[in-house]
Length: 335
Ligand code: SAM
Ligand code: SF4
Image (cartoon, rainbow, N blue to C red; front, side, top):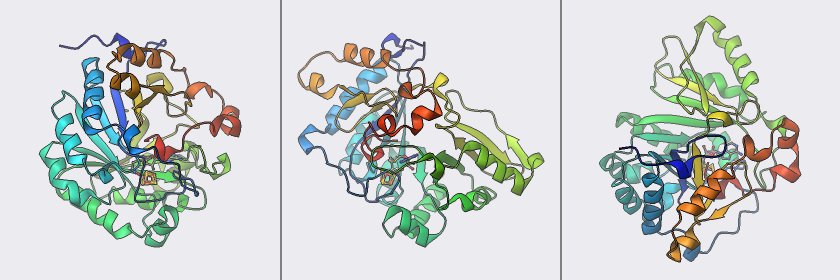
């Protein structure tokens, strides 16, 4: 029976059935678009959700209509108790997926298989080893590639997240799509987004239109097939005729998909963020630890969600550093 999920419905009638939980603020990479050069002040461990707290809070969401949970971070697989968290969450009636940089996939492969985590989003911004070192500040390219193949050989459904940055990897769009000729993966090109400390400006971003122009020029329009978008899509999906895989474009800046948004975020220190771009956070861990019912807290957080991008309705708003820097760094939100 579908539970009463009114607490997860916002003032615009959007029902939120998709919870993204950040498990950790730490990472084994230093992607320059995500982690500020000076690092971030880490939350003291006692203020982070334990495995039991992740489970209990997730259970409240599931009891109120969430049927999809994605674990993210920081790097979620860095959490020493990752197997315990997955085991607990697998008791809930919900699909579980993860977003990972892929480095620790081999270490956790059996746990992922055992608890039926089938959908993995793996981040990989370049197919050139030296460029990987430049963007992540770490030398782990081969490991990530090996683990991508390990996932595919074990029948995981893999989406590869590529954040496009002008002058860095916009010349690799076609190379990424060519991977889909023989690999059953979905490449997701992501418009570079502004977060605290990531030195974003719009001139560094490659827009949905620029991506599609490049693709049309190379593959020609008649070879490009528009696929049906998923319900509550964030990526507009396409494929090249006769290629095994597909690709999508996540255009949060130039063509946002807020109307169908069904996502809520929970940070590693137990704060609800009702939108990726919002600087408003609702503490849910403290009331939970105090033994207070958290449904009303959740309900108020959802109800205060703005219609579009946390109130940044225009591109001028997005460009405004006063607005776009007044947020956490992405590493501490969980994308
Ligand atoms: N460490 C994991 C990973 O890299 O997949 C999970 C956390 S990471 C914050 C989640 C996703 O956010 C990654 O796919 C990453 O590329 C994306 N991301 C980080 N910073 C971004 C930015 N400034 N703009 C767009 N996407 C970003
Ligand atoms: Fe780490 Fe993922 Fe951020 Fe890269 S994008 S620094 S891998 S959290």
